[in-house]
Length: 278
Image (cartoon, rainbow, N blue to C red):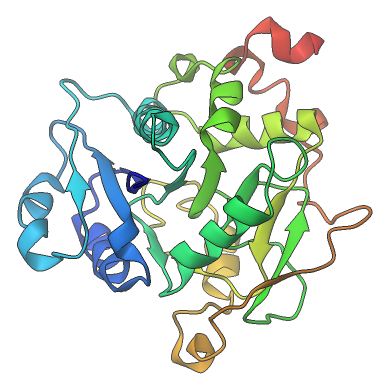
């Protein structure tokens, strides 16, 4: 029997948002196949909420980890994903995992859609990521269609352990413990020429602007709020399989920034020399 598929859940002192995430996760189709692996800061306001989680959300099987000292956002996320990747890579493991932060709400079929992508469509080279949404998408939302983009959207995503280990071999979160982890991962994706798969109808909703990249960028949060997503009553009936992969041949759309030019110099210290000379 395969071990439960891990869901890395790093927390950032947002108990109100985390409660909404756990309530939605408890309703997800197939939740019995998963285990949520928390990574909590020692003085995190979510600790008491998670103490009550087994009674409030009994369908969510959980293993908790509390840092001995405050790690900071980047280090905490990476440590959470390290543990999920190790769990998935162990004998009898799934070989892949999901990352769901405490401000990302999953739709009912989110886990199933990410699993369909990772187990049947993704690889370690061209499409190493499956993401729950893409805020830059200009395509019409269709409930069961998945496509690709030259980007990485960090709002509910799945990856194989082998891909994460390849990234961690050249990335050190200590470069800036409270800095971003997602931009370095997106830069690494760009250096490899890789892409993500994502559903045309979003399967995740970002709800926690405070303390995130969206806090000081009203346009970012507005674009996320405007995404049609499968949790809305108007779209819920379309959110189901069977899923189909379309439009991944040829050049794929990308985000608005030139990652090499705009971010390479800013985050160069996050990587070992091997990345830049590869």
